[in-house]
Length: 312
Ligand code: RBF
Ligand code: MG
Figure 1 (spheres, rainbow, N blue to C red):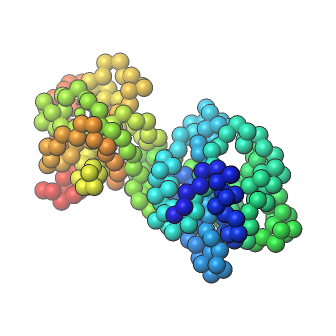
Figure 2: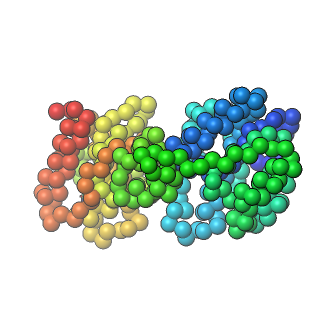
Figure 3: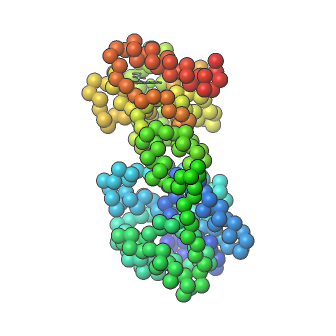
């Protein structure tokens, strides 16, 4: 897969290429996105076109609505790149989303980003908008396409178990801890990645060493059955997401922590980069009256996770 980073690079690399293009955020590359990308690939193969995805980073919402609760991406751009590659996309163009781009009229966007290229097929989601204030609508594209001889396809929401799959749906499920449903809509588990930092080491003292990462993730606080990937190996685990109210005196909201205990392992993962895949929700995080109560519960959580993995 070829990676493009800006308009100049795109102009240089795409001269003479006939394109099957799609434009969008593709945050999460969920099953709906995957269906659309398969259509892009099929059409490009059938008609001898080069398949290309144009996407933006940061997510336009982060610039347009900085206070929006869904400002944060579900998955980083590096993951988007990986998924696009897996799906056989030939060119991925990640354009910087800037103030300037956000102020561009729909006409200017068409002029600068579409007319510069030989687009034969343009595939967009039904809710696609572009240009300043989301003023650019699919109707704009349809009349442009008619003049240019471009074929346009508007992709309708993908249904899975009678649900329209969308990034918003996935976000809502994550905020309820429903990670099993999330996996079904994503086609893979929700995951976070980060570098293991020093905890206060109490987990080890209490017989359940943990690997902590300090990243914010748009997921419900609670205890989950997970898989932790590190150094290309996968370990069954149990993970607490939250504020540790039992031990944290002033429940520092900013100090949200993702803490994983690897089942039947005693690895020191300090400074390693780990990936936590969320498989099942066990229970919400809770403030216990005493430490022994907390420990008893954590040992129950560990037992439940072991049963899930058939670890007796
Ligand atoms: N801390 C809490 O205050 N409440 C919890 O419900 C809670 N559940 C946990 C479940 C698991 C499986 C693990 C590994 C940790 C949990 N913790 C919880 C965090 C716990 O307080 C922390 O691991 C120790 O303080 C050691 O850092
Ligand atoms: Mg720890």
